[in-house]
View 1 (cartoon, rainbow, N blue to C red):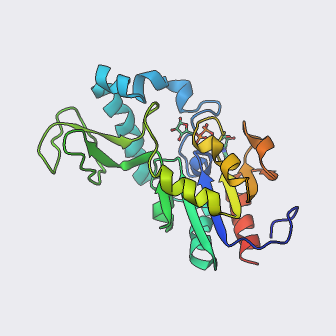
View 2 (view 1 turned 135 degrees about the vertical axis):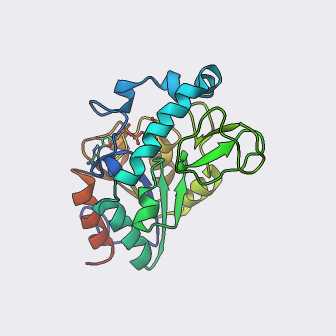
Length: 238
Ligand code: APR
């Protein structure tokens, strides 16, 4: 068990990841210096109002991020979490705020992508969510219904994140909650530690203290590619 905790071996682990876990794969975070929100305004590309006002601009923003995916690889942190899922005797649920596909490509399957996915599109008419690797444009036809009504299958500010019922059930029954690479600034994810902390041990792994570090039982600072494999070794008794 990670040092600093009672010797209770966890049986149900919930892990939350944010943009920091993909940083060492070469994908930008949002709020670090030089991050995505330093270059473009949330109000212009990541709200339903932005899409209604200028859909071409929103498509272009997500097309550029989707186009990065083939050029990046899962890093040691993504791979360690997939190893944990395979080897851990108990139950591991991975909840990610990220819309990249690096957890899937690393081999994680018990994965909930609460903010959607760059490698899917969504039809605003028939609600199909086809896998998508190329660009989407305002006139791109939905493969299911043919209507030129596609949007990125990403949850925008002001929209409800996905899988919340399943996430909240898992948080209520877990005995270990680990947050990795997130600034703890966006809810509901930033509040997960409070829900889990009712009965679970809570641990934050982050390059620097987050906005919610004080709510965790333990915090470790450093790069995810060092901290996450080390934690997985501890949890697997390595
Ligand atoms: N290893 C670990 N942590 C890192 C690393 C690294 N190599 N590099 C950066 N970090 C940390 C930063 O210190 C920061 O606390 O990752 C965190 C990234 O924070 P944000 O950029 O705010 O990203 P995130 O927390 O995932 O944002 C949450 O906000 O904009 C919305 O929908 C978007 O899902 C996103 C949500």
